[in-house]
Amino acid sequence: MKAAVPKPEKDKVKVALPNIGERHQVHIINPKSGRGEGAAVYAAVQKSAAETGAEIRTSEYAGHIEEIAAEVCAKNPFVHIISYGGDGTVNETVNGILKANAGRTASFSVVPVGSGNDFSKYVNDSGVFQKAELNKIDAVRVTCGENERYFVNMMNIGFDCNVVAEVASLKKLPFLHGSAAYIAGVAKTLIRKKTFRGKVTLEDVVIPDAPETVLPTEVFDQKILLTAAANSRYCGGGFCAAPLASLNDGRMDVLVIKNVTRLQFLTLVGAYRAGSYIDESGTMPPRFSRILTYRKCRKLTIEGPELYCLDGEVRPTALRPTDAQRVEAEVIPGALWYAAL
Image 1: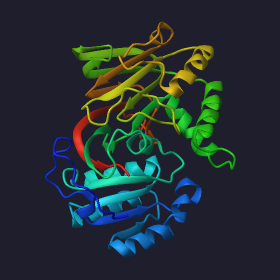
Image 2: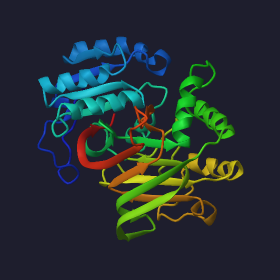
Image 3: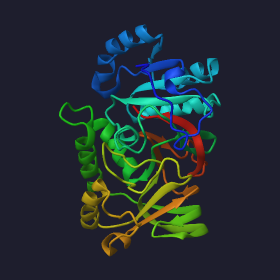
């Protein structure tokens, strides 16, 4: 995998760091990802690593990828990590790099062999980044009680979070995976449609169709069907939930969908999947703007939800009855180096 990589053009990326072809490379493979696809690539990676002197590590349990990433960064702050897996694997890799305080020096790539490859769909396949070239990307730090985590793709709260919990069980069925499992999860969750009373506070806010206006704060206190905070664009196996999101603009894209009827929700799903509910100028047709708010901000605080989901991992907001159901998310601009493959 350690192919010769041309130097980046100076006017595109200004980097005083070794490019990925000059770095020690560590391949981290999740053999259980993508219904065993991670194990299938292992032999090919072994051959490539033997030729290039790269290192191979395999994860053995939940959280192991994060531990491996932190360990190899501690040994070599300029390491390039290539992770094989889905969005959960990416999340562990990112948290390992940042746990080791190596975000300014280490770099990473992802090879999509997971059941959900939404981060890869944007960073590797959309053409947003030139292949094999180092690019700075933002991360989002999430604080809930004493817990602190980072994500680079998306945080979901409310309906979407409940869907993720359903999808985790549905993916065990042999005929459901990717977006099909997500659609089935949506249908199952919609039957039991559950909202929550939430207070969403945004800071340093940009309204997409009026980008010259920056609001210090904006508050939504209402019944909410779902909230999504996006650093990248896709979730749910290919749903373009945040079509205006950028990985290096210093802001996250936030969606707040009001409590709506099942019929109203069904009219939104197709456009939500395609990302066509909002255009490039930030304009939404009235049938969407009446029920959906889209903003860009640097910080989000949400009070009221029972659960939150980071890149496919569902977590409770309160571990004890006395804990506040409160989640904070803040963008860390340029927190990581990424190279598209």
